[in-house]
Amino acid sequence: QIIIHQQVELLEAILGTETSSKYEIKNHLGQRVYFAVEENDCFDRNLCSPIRSFTIRIADNTGREVIRVKRPLRCNSCWFPCFLQELEVQSPPGTVAGYVVQNWDPFLPKFTIQNESKEDVLKIVGPCATCGCFEDVDFEVKALNEMSTIGKISKYWSGFVNNVFTNTANFGIQVPVDLDVRIKAVMIGACFLIDLMFFENSLDGL
Image (cartoon, rainbow, N blue to C red; front, side):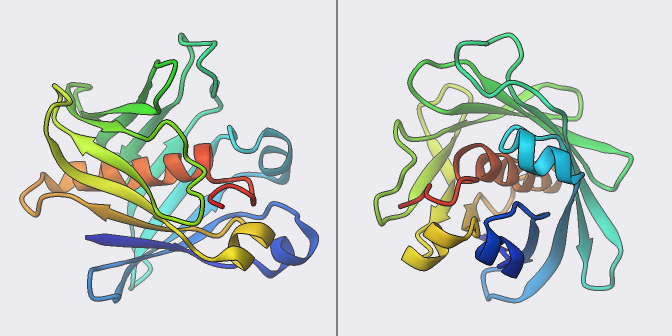
C-alpha cells in the first residue's frame, strides 16, 4: 500500500488561488519515501485547471529524482473520444516506464495502464459518481478482461474543512506486492491523473 498526501497550501486556502501541488508519498507504515512537486505556470494552473499540462517530479528522501510524470494538455470530455487524457511516467527520468491512457466510456471513468512498449497491462475502472458524499471513493484496478479486481486507488475522505476550503487530498494505492516495479510507478502517475481530473475542484469529494 502507498499513501499519497497532498500538502495544504496556505495561499490556496485563504484566497482560493490555485497553487502548484506538492505531495508526500508514504509507505504502509506512514514513513515518507518520496516527495512530489508539480511544475507548470500560473496560466495553466488557473485557466486550464483541471485539464492543465504538468510535469510532476518525484524525489526520494535524499533529493534524487526517481520518477517523472508528464501530462500534456488534452481533452477531458466524453464528447471528444479522439483526444482523451494520456500520461507518461518515466522511471528513472528519461526512461519510459509506462503510460496511463483514458478510455472512452459514456458512464464510467476508465483508464488503461500500459508498459513502456504501449502494451496494455491493467485496467482502472472508477465509480459512476465520484462526489464521495462523506466517504472514500474507490477506483478499482482490474485485469484486462475487467472481470477480476487486483487492487484499487482510493480517494480518502479528508474532512469538511479540507474539502471545502482547499483542494488537498489523501489517496491510497493498493496493488499486489509482486507487481512489476515500473508498473507501480505508473500507478502513482495514475493516482495524480485521477486527482487532477476528478478531485481538483475544492467542493469535490463532499
